[in-house]
Amino acid sequence: MMPTAAFGPREEARSPWRRALVTGGAGFLGSRLCTRLLDSGVEVDCLDDLSTGRAEKVAHLAGRPGFRFLEQDVSDEGCAGLLPGPYDLVLHLAGPGVCPGPWPERPVEILDTGSLGTRTALALAERDGARFLLASSPPVPADGDPVGPHIARAEAVRFSEALVAAHAAAHGSDAGIVRLFGGYGPGMRTDDGGIPAAFLEQALAGRPVTVPGDGSTPHPLCYVDDMVDGVLLVAAGRSVRPVDIGGDEAPTAVEIARRVVELTGSGSTLTFVDGQAPDGPRPVTGFAREIFGWLPSVTWQEGLERTVASLRGRAEPVPPAPAERAGEWSA
Image (cartoon, rainbow, N blue to C red):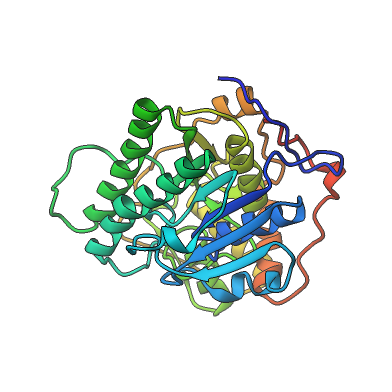
């Protein structure tokens, strides 16, 4: 399905939205989306219960015209009544698909967020005739012990995607799904145990950098600004089909670890530990490129350089001016 609206990072591009709701808006990706939307003239309601998000992520937006922060769980009864809207766009990032890895397993809360929270966000979008976009994660194999460890998150992700697809089919809702792979960049948490987060935390602390197995497992990485571009491109379209947004570059774990040590100037050594990291799913970005014109512009080496600079307290390298960024959020 071809995109229908026009929205891009270029100064002459106009946003197709007047007001947006971003659930999970105080998270790593959500805060970036709030900022980008505000910069394009969109009023933003940012909803977050701060269980994994951080208020300081959106502190720089406080007082800006058109921005409102609400500390609230989207799964709570009565949440919808606090969000009168009307909205043109609902970005649902509060689901389990974008939860950081180390978040303690709270199976009831996770399942509620995937079910009740997604229902609430969908209902708000349908109430106002808004475009709805669910931020999800790479698909998880369908087989597995339904009461095994960490299964609640996988089931919540699957249910939330199924719920969005069912609403689109049964009610004709303008609802879609974007699956996010390997997002990283300035402002990311380094305590999620993943790659490159764990390597960054260890190297900056001067501890040995622990690489799983022989370090040959590839890890697709996508710089946060490129990911924001992709999310907004998909949001501005009318695709119901899930769209993958992730880096085509997939450096190995040992390549990432060596680059992190080099950039941090750390004396950390690489320690190879038992347990080869599984070779997870790779993003299939052909649809995002061909239909939405999405094209990542930051290499993984450059992205890590910007991330390390930010984590060490230095000024983040200045990104290209809006008119110079590759691609346009045409939708």
